[in-house]
Image 1: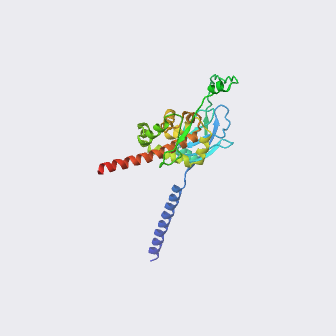
Image 2: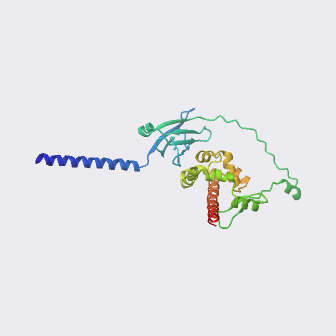
Image 3: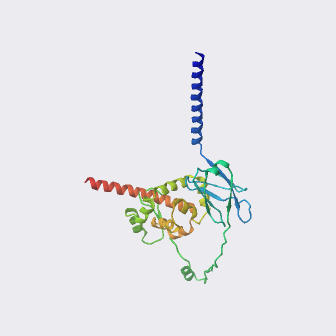
Length: 273
């Protein structure tokens, strides 16, 4: 009898231990995994502060502190994109060893930049208003809004912009379809980029389009062409920072979705008729 009771107690103990262990594992999987690292210059071996780090897979960002240290959410096989002014941008894959052993030291290589000679032509004013006014370039970046569509409208400097805007709205270019319609994963990343304050702060300081190109998997030409097809002016494309470009692309994408839905509804009505 005693032996039977001992056997029952032993079975209950095993069940409890198994349940507890499973609960522990389940808890660990719900906690986000994070990796730590220190970034240094390969030339000086000194830590680099304010290095931009973005997890391309999870679309979260951070930057290094004064000691070159950072910590970011990541899982095994995620790719981190590291960029820093004057240094070559690199991609680093998160490995199981990194997750297991903690802080990893990463070197970045300085770029050798050759500055090109730039000639600045100053305006030669004569003092005569009518003559001088002709020398000053005039740009008109008007912005148009289409009733019924979200967003703040379209910016452009072309004289026939009304025709172009309507053409873009009701007959969206194949280019926009190729960029938006065939890249749902990248567009989801676009939304995540807008929600991450760290990435937005980084983009607000940048004008090189690099982070946008990496996350959206497009070329610089494609980025400019997207904004151009959405009827933003060349002045905007040339002067906007990366955050403004992100917002412009996002706005254009939201309007594209409205167009696409309306187009599908029209097609369904036509099929039913």
